[in-house]
Image (tube, rainbow, N blue to C red; front, side, top):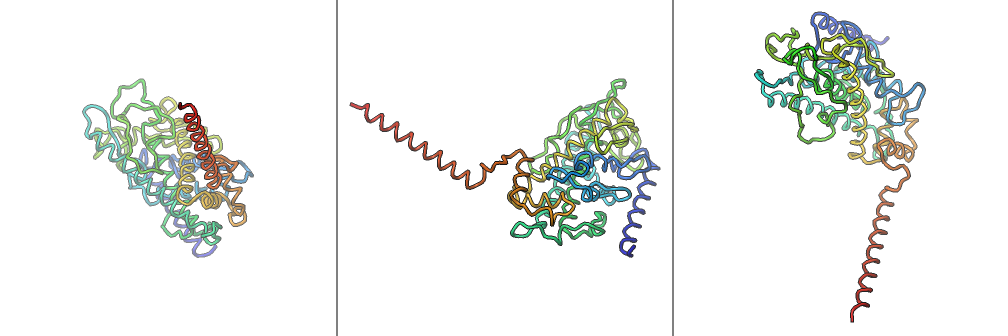
Length: 389
């Protein structure tokens, strides 16, 4: 083991140890779905990401899924956090990275709807920046001719996601995507978007109403820049270090992270089946399963949106190669047939695969339509003249 690899491994072990200690000392964590496999966490972020984006065993990626080695870097594999887990290493105290502190409840409440909505908008804007970073970095995956740049698609020890040391375009793009996915997944764990209140208890800060909505959420439009529309009853939890169901300190009298989160439980990384919830809100009805299902759908949606964004920014051919470079374990060898990759991209984004909307064909079709229209107009006018006395 080289000194650099040994040093990087020690850093990961140290961060895992610190996180485990923090989690063991508090009922909940603002980090959201789990990143490690201790302290009550079961690597929920990794398992959600795998269930949404993993290729079937032995399958070659068609652009919708990630091959095994790339997925290890995106989703993480014990003890590595992966890109999805990166915010738990250096953004634990950033509420916007986890959609925290956007709490509100109708009636006599310490915060206004406007304050709560502003906190949620801050989360969406933060995730939009991460999403854009993924697209920006993807531009470095291909050269001016649309060919994969070998030096930019390597993974290996340099792809750490924890200390801003990544230089390769693939590592940087995966990091941006992973950080955006982390916050988007946390939205379902930390908010009442997908859950229900305990029907046996009154509605109050310890038991806020649930919206019981599926994923994906219109709130999490990370590709666009339109104003964020926040439902009136949407809330996330207030978080402080001493996280308790009955808020203390700055969270006194407020909906807390401890009361609302659905962070902990078992998630099958293949089927996304969610069982054994352990948080107060998670054990109510099917709340943990609903939060996981919403996060899985959201994860798939964000990857689809990123692919569409690459098409809009770089054109179909370059985007198709970028998607291939991001999802394949050996992109230099796998991403050479550009025409096939373009058809694959169109198929997966709902576009035509037979090429009838290619620019040249489209122009020809328009010319034909205009020509037919002109001929019909001439014919009508000719008939009108003949009818005149």
